[in-house]
Image (cartoon, rainbow, N blue to C red):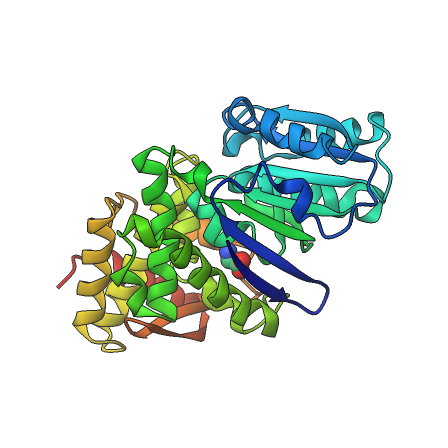
Length: 351
Ligand code: GLY
């Protein structure tokens, strides 16, 4: 088992990574004062792992209640959130009880927000069961739901008390879901550590791969928990990626959309002479080896309209993540005109 300590201004906690950890969840809990555990999961994940988690938690005398919702980004909405909060109240959870978010990014984001809101905050354990949530969304405290106007528009920074990453749960993921998570790993490689690409396809080193991504995330969020500076580096490919997600009505999974977003901004930067052509070659090659898309059929005008409602926009500018070379990115405040120009340039054919 590997343990990464996360240090943020609001909370310090561990991310534990290893096979078979759902069964050991009770032993791993940082404190055992809770009387009730509320497990939140979707109807794909619940049949696979809810019983295991429930049995583990019962060994320390916890009463366990479950909230299971329909799987998919379309459930990450105000209605499901209110249903969940009502369920917590009806189950008479108190502030010393605990919420367990068992699943992928949608579950972690929405259950995390419910934990932040219910009684102004109850303890939260994240149990990511997808590669994407293991390397990214379960760590760092970003919680949210979507509005019709855009993704993650209602949320809070709310750190978990523990993240239990049971890598055995990743063994059964379909290849498309692994590819989706690999997009975020390629992102970490592009912004900070190109050598992650050396082990991305080595199944025996998956725990190490996840631990290294989580360590990078810790470096960033420990300095900037609230996403006003350095943390924005983690948004590489996300501004244009979110536009792809939204325009596809969320049928393009997050990682796939981020892959396309990374290619658009990198292509633009190559064309503008900001980074060498090799940066794009390495990126596209890595994404293709993961089975990820590198383009989408949307116009700059369509995408820009969506970019304008992105929460990363300030009134008159957007901070974009700009590659200098593969393995290093910087933040650049761009006017809306500059952003549109980069988007249009990035959508032109790659050189
Ligand atoms: N997923 C990007 C972040 O946590 O900041």
